[in-house]
Length: 187
Image 1: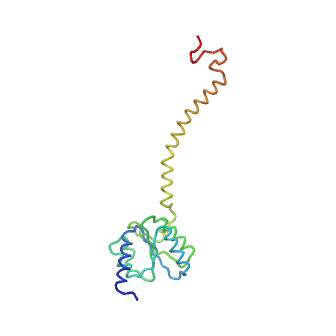
Image 2: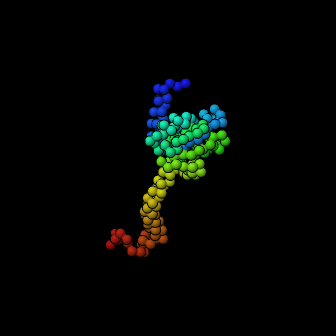
């Protein structure tokens, strides 16, 4: 059994973590095998999050005064939480994939930036593009007009060179001596 000081330390650590995060997803882990749990923890960590099994009273006390408070109140049964301060979509994608692979792992609810989400909303969140994907799409959209302007400017000079080249080939400048002298060197 843990000593009172160890319990207080666990409470303080979880409270600090929950105060910093923007996303908390409440799950149940009952029936999840050890190897599946290990894969889950690694996947959540790779997505920039944390995963831990929590005692209900510890979770409720730690969540007091944080955005996760409405989610972690009056918990019953075995619970675990996954949380992140970075990309909520990445965390939701990882957990949704795990839930498909491991039937014993199930969502209960979640909180994203202070808003409580249902199971369906968490699954919808998992289908959104990630933060990195959105940033790359925005960068592409911002660069597209500049690329079009550069292409249009290059096309003007390219078209001028092509026209002059065709005129020289057609002997429009009188290189053969029959036309006017464009430079004015003949006297």
